[in-house]
Figure 1: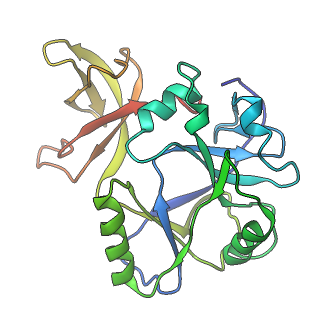
Figure 2 (figure 1 turned 180 degrees about the vertical axis):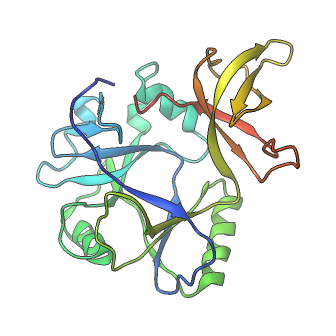
Figure 3 (figure 1 turned 45 degrees about the vertical axis):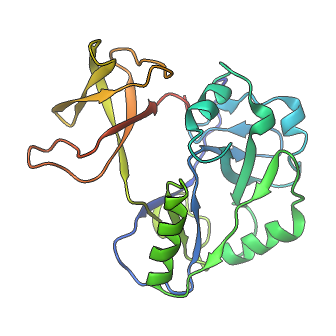
Length: 246
C-alpha cells in the first residue's frame, strides 16, 4: 500500500443492542479489508492507496464511487492480508464485494437498487446480497446459520438511511464474538505467543506457527466473548497485526 493525502470518511456501524429491526436489510459481516473505490484507485479507510494489480482494477467501474470490502472467503483473512500487503499474490482469488455507493441518490435501499441495475458483476467485483428482515428472530436465526458456516456475524442497515460519514445507529453489527485491539509488550517463546496490554490489563495470545509474529509495540486485533471478573477478555484469540490500513 502507498501513502496518499486523500481523506476518506466512511459509514461505520454501531453494535446492535436489541432494537426492532423489522424491514431493515441484513447482510453477512465479511471478514475482509474495507476498501473505497473512487473510479481510479482503491483506498483503505485511512486514505492509503491499495496497490491492486491493473488486471483487477480494470474490471471496476470508472463512473461511480463505491464502498465495499476486499474478500477471499470465510476463514481466509490472513491470506487476504498478505495479498493486500504485497507479501503474497492471491489477487486472482480476491473479490471486491460492494455494499454501498456513497454518492448515489436516496436512502440505502435506493442506492442498493442503483448498484444492482448499473454494476456488472465480474471476476473482480460482486454486490453483497441484502435480505429484508421479517423481525428480530429472523435476524438472529440468519446470523446463527451464517456463523455456523464460518461467517463473522451480520450487518443490519436502515433502508432509509443516507450515507453518513462516521459511526451511526443507522448501520448496526451483530456477531457472537467481539473484537478489539491491544498493544504487544512482550514475546512468550515457550508457547509461541505474545503478551499484550489491553486497557492496562495484561494477558497472552497464542500465535499460530504459520502466522507472522508481531513485534513489541505493534497493535494487534483479537476476538473474545465477554470478560472474566479480572477484566481479561474471555476466549481471546489472535487475529492479526493491525497495520493493513496504514
